[in-house]
Length: 380
Image (cartoon, rainbow, N blue to C red; front, side):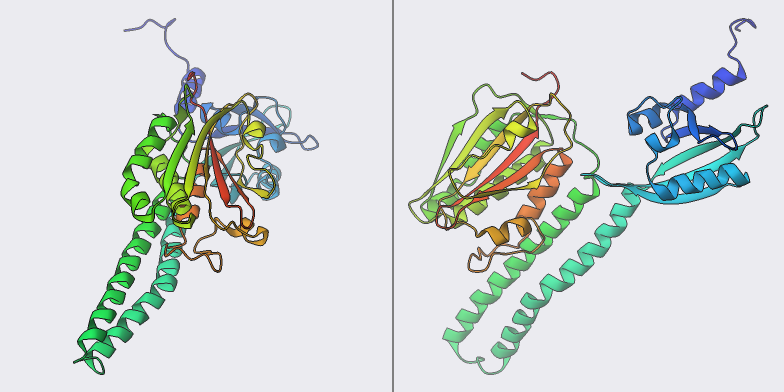
């Protein structure tokens, strides 16, 4: 049994418990005329706000006007308050703040405790269900109507026509395959969006990953008469990432490049290092138009590995570039038979990895899609 000198006092015990709590907790105080300031923030709060909390103005951590108003009103009236808010950024998060007033200190200073609950997962799950139902019902309606029409034709007018029956059955098989791909892509996109705010923690060798993707799609490239050339990649640092998701990113980009490259053409995949986000965003093509579809919130000194996938296709007009990563957006005259979700999946995976996505294109000169991902800490 510890003696009385070794026992932890109630104040120290309370602080130890607060430090171990997974939810951000801050203690706010303010006089009748003084602006509220933060007296204490636990470990979870310091990780969220990334500033020195003790002594900081309340607005330095919680910048949302509705949150500040609720806390100031709770301080003034000594009544509990609750408010939901969203933090804006590359990875938006949803929070609910609970403010509970405490007994005022001697001298008139008012105090309250603010507990923040992260509701991002619940909101994303709710949004995922709604988006999936809306997208599935919208995009599946056309192929289902087509299938129903062919079935009705086969049962009536083409009942005894062997040539028409064979033709219609082939079209029906294509429509069914497209619906299966659509459902798979929608489910994949929904899973990615659900965990988009949680960064990956593994290490991935992009050079080997690109080579694995090139080997896997060799039947497609041979069928279309297109070659894939890989340049660079020697002695590159590993990146922080989820290998399965990065395989999906590279495969989507290379698949698109192969589909849009004419027979006998070449798709080039280039790997290179960049010392900063600015260096990663430098143009890689002469002429044409470049546009950043996604930029990370990376800090100073962060290095990146860049993967550039260039095709020899017809190129993309500049008015289409800003919408390329939207769900189901397709450039008129360049329908590849895909689901229209490939670049949306790429963008959300890269966003989860805290990376960036750039497109460069010129009509008649092909396109280049560049993904840059942060190097793993301690990787050389």
